[in-house]
Image (cartoon, rainbow, N blue to C red):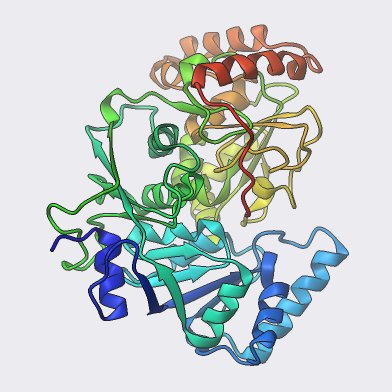
Length: 455
C-alpha cells in the first residue's frame, strides 16, 4: 500500500492505517494559542466544563498579533491572557516583543516531526517546515484540543509540488512559493496537504515560508519532505497517489509579484516594473528572519530610501532581531531610513504598527494582500520578496532586483536615479496605480472577488 506523507503521519499517530477521506481522532503533540483569539478559547474551555488544560507542558501561548497593545480594549484582553497563563501554570509563554508564534514554534524546537500540532492561527501550516502536520483551527476546536489533548481530522488528499533546478541570484523561495500559488490558486488546495519535494535541505527559514504559504491555497497542511529534522520513517511511500502534481523549475524562475487584492494574481516582476509604492513592509512569519533582513540590507547598505517612501522592518522574533543587531544588518537598515518595529506580526494584519491609509500602495513581504488586510480597505498591497522590497524602498517603484545585484556602484546609482526620476510625484502615485493594477490583473489571468480569510 502506498501512502502520502499526510497518510503516513496520521496512520502512525492514530494507530491505524488510514487513507484520504477517512476520519480520525488523533493526539496532539502541542497546542498553540495567541492573543488574537484567547478570549474565545477561554470561553470555549468553560463551555466544555473544563477549567484546566490537559497538559500544561504541551501548550504554547503567545502575545504577537497586536503587540504591544495598541488600544485599551486589546490591553484588557492581554491582561486576561496573562492572568489565565498564570492560573493555568503554563510555562511556555511568550509575551509582546518575543516574536511571531510560528517563527518561535519552529525556532525553539516545539514542533516535533511526524506529530500533529494545532494552532489558533491559519498559518499553523508553518510547522510542516520540520515535517510536522500543522493545522490552524478555530477557537472552539482549539478549546477541545486544550481540554482533551486530542482533535479530529479528515485525512486530506495530497498535492505534490516538485522543485527542480537551482534558484538564480536575486530569486528566492518566496518567489518559488508565489509561483506555486499562481499555479494552484487560492482554493486549488482546499483541505489538501501540499507536499514539497526536492527542497528538504533548504535552510529552515525557507521551509517555513513554503509550508506557511500553503494556507494561501486553502490547504489544511503543508509539509516539506526529507528535512534534516525528519526521522527515516517520515517519508511518503514510493508510488503514493496525489490528487495533483506540479513541477516548478527554479532555474527559469524570475522574481514574482502578487497583485492586489488576490494572492494568486501573480505576475513575473518584469510585468510590474515601474509600479509606484508609498510604503514597504519587511517582516511577518513569511519573511522577517535574519536572511530576509540581510537580503534587504545588501541592497540598502550605505544608501537612503527614496523620498516620500516609508520602510518598516519588523523582525519575526527576538532571536532574529538580535542576530541582525550583531552582524550589522539592523544598523544598515536603520541608517537607510527604516522604522524598526517590535518583533511580532507588526502591520501584517493591520492591527498595530504601520497601518495603511486610504489610497496608499504597499509592497509587503508578508503573505496576504486582500482588501483591508493591513489597514484601509482602499489601500493596495503588492507582495514580493525581500530583494524586491528593498529595491522598491530605494527607488519608490517595483523593479527587478537582479540588475542591481549585478551592477557596479556607478551602474547601481544610475539605475536608482532613473527609476526615481520616472516615479510619479507624491499624490499621483495612487491614481496611476489603479490603471497599472488593472493591467496586471489582466496579465495574471486571474480575477474575481478577493478571498476573505482569517488571520
